[in-house]
Image 1: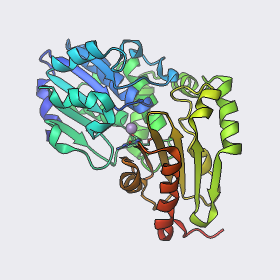
Image 2 (image 1 turned 90 degrees about the horizontal axis):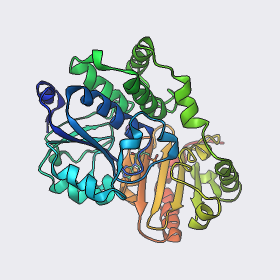
Image 3 (image 1 turned 135 degrees about the vertical axis):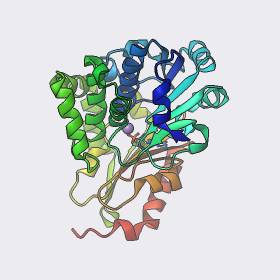
Image 4 (image 1 turned 90 degrees about the vertical axis):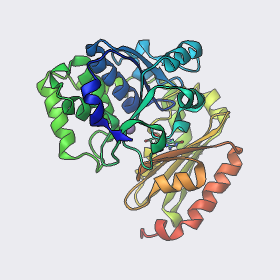
Length: 339
Ligand code: 5GP
Ligand code: MN
């Protein structure tokens, strides 16, 4: 993989470009993709932004979101764009598996693939150019660095600012995670100097839910959460029936895992959801428990040191049994807290 800087001199030549990200994109995935779209658009490229799946409705306000193709619905149009692309930017993921059914199309494409990502253990061999930096707060911050590094700071407009802010703010847990270095605040200060209105971004992302989501959260916290004090672990298990009963939509379960994590003494929090086609898990930890390795070892997943996810094809009960066995196996790392 050649350094990302090697594409800076090539930016001025118009190309067919695809920008894509991981399945069920979050605000960092969508925000970094659209910020890059609004940046590259100013060079006269032909650009298609493709999401491997649908996304949460609370992202629809982002400038350009309406033009994003959902690969699962607009498969033919998206495939055509992938097959005729010169460059494919892969943002906020680092293993092709995270693009689900798009994986085989991306691997077969003749385009040069360009990685910009901050997750652990990237699949380096498939990318021609790229940057992988686990020290970065968000992919949005890396897109900002890309724009500044290519010496085009003057191209940062309102749309880019809003998309970048949404990504960096959500991926840092509203600037609370240790990844929130001075560079993050400097970037936000720069965007503010350029006129960014940050409050509307928070309102769009966090004050836009329907009543049923809160009924669902109430039900889940009361009836679906188990605390294993001996392992400093809390687990929420959600059967598919709950998703149907409460009309749960994509994005409604985002952030749920933070409730058990905020219980005093809890080092590991997990949510396992039966989505029908697969069992999706989310892991969060505090301190020195590495959920990236945990998710990789037991749940076909990965992510960051303190935030990771995975998926399993086995039935829900088997995944839960697996989780309980896994925390038992990790007793030494998990049981250090004294109540
Ligand atoms: P979440 O729990 O919010 O779905 O994901 C937490 C973090 O782990 C995110 O950075 C996400 O990109 C990553 N992640 C989630 N699921 C998977 C997965 O199945 N595989 C890998 N490699 N990373 C994941
Ligand atoms: Mn991210």
